[in-house]
Image 1 (cartoon, rainbow, N blue to C red):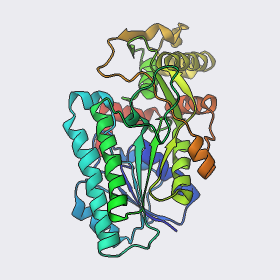
Image 2 (image 1 turned 45 degrees about the vertical axis):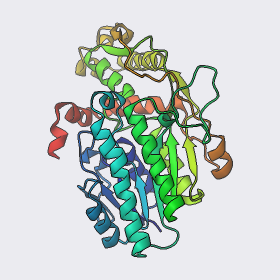
Image 3 (image 1 turned 60 degrees about the vertical axis):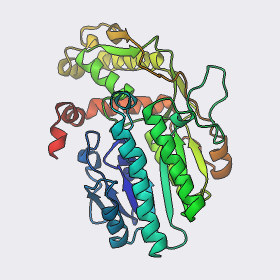
Length: 359
């Protein structure tokens, strides 16, 4: 049975992981720590918090408080999601990325080592699992082979550089101190509770409000998309069957250009508006409310600095070693995502107007 500290679980991926873990492991104890910055939303955890799953408003850089929680709850597992993750924000202000992603990870590692090893308060099968990104590997050309666990690191943005640094710190704590660690590097996630600054939710919400759909450059940049519940399932595989000290790439094997994603979202919403009069009444500014194609909102904008062309993950290793493969096809996952946003306007409305901060 796990007694788990989960960092950053008021955010998108962490919250979905906690929801998945509670369904699959209802007897486990989960202590969530989140500093509730702009992307941390307590409402992401509605319905899952109780005596066995608690939320503590704690900054991961508070090593003493993290150590106290590890001791108090006799925790034997850390799953570390907490991170600043938006590339555009890292270009505009990299300092917070260094503080959260590098110093924050080091703070957690120090606390885990102190409590689990120096104070010997954890069994030998303790685990520190670090959640990272495929962006640490840099960029690919169209015909390049996908990233593997052996691909050299070549980060191109302050965000990816900070995540690469945190990966190396986790590795160092294993090789130097013997801390039981694993790392996973994932491709782009999508699904419920995705903060509206990211591509898919941004486009959905802008379409509904009849706002421009900004597409960087020519829109041909390629990303591998992974349904967020499949990411949670992959981490579960690593925690249960992964080899200590190993890195596993978790991908969707599902490459799409950005412009094709935007066109697909437009098509799906065109279809839903055509079939549902209530949507036309609720969102009169959407082109589809007047029978016009949502693609009319697409606008190409100046490409961002250091924009990586393509990410793609080779999942051979995790499939061969742990038997993992995505369970949700993109066709199913993207429809579920669109329908979730249509059914949860109160959630994203509170994010847009900032009222979620008062939760």
